[in-house]
Length: 377
Image 1 (tube, rainbow, N blue to C red):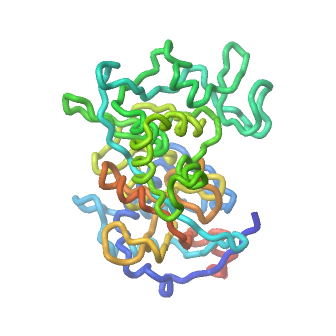
Image 2: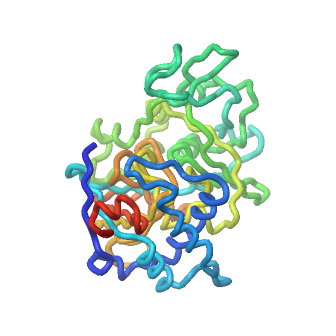
Image 3: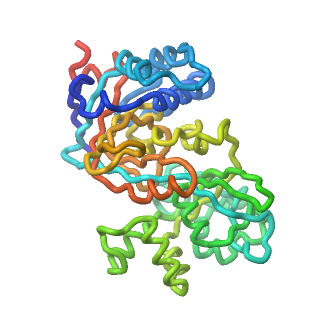
């Protein structure tokens, strides 16, 4: 994909002065801690590398944090203006676009019993990553990211329908059992969930692996078939259709052959989201899922969407987000998924997000991207 870089300036970046980036700084600081003490993030095709981020990471970690856990918005804004330079990435005129996602809350039981029949599954032990999905081993189709490996004999993993009708039923993979297959399905789409047990206990699960089969959005299928209009399709309208057509619900969901396996996850605070692809807890309203082949995790990205209302205020969406997650449907430099938070209220926010957007990355000062855009001479 042909990319061009266009210089921006904080003083003229629409919405920058009105944003409240304290939570974005907190999210960035978590990524700084992981990348400097555990493992550097992989460099995306834009070319932002671990050395580019080192000065900003060091400055963020050296910052004294108040007891509240957050800097003031003024201090956070000054930090980003000091250590970064805004650059718009233009991908040959391709329009930017944002959707939303969240962490569902699902009522579950530890056992399969009356009312609880639909399991969340752990990853099978013999499900392994394909080293190169474009050139997989014999027995696995091109493009598949995962395969079953039985003593050197590799095969494609069963798809959603096969798994939900018992392909792994004898392996004891069940983490918990839900009341509704639709709740399980949407947790798969989101890649995470909070599991609410009858005794009041809450546990979290997050993405561990997938079947490798292609993801198919069932909302798009319903629009194509004239069941829901393109203008009204949303998470809520899809759920309503599934509830109104119980005889067709399973077959529709099975058309999305992709299946997600989970693992239990610990998070330092209930106010934060699950630990996602960047290996840090997501910050509600500030973490962004991106194409990890393009972007480097930890990159601050200013997203503006004039037709989308801000999460918390009566103004158009214009927020500094931090690249900390990814997703199958997130492809290209100007495509993102906004993390709205956890629970039903966050689900309502996330389900209605579908808007054209502009993406301005904050490139570390001194980086090659900042130089090429004309910031550094």
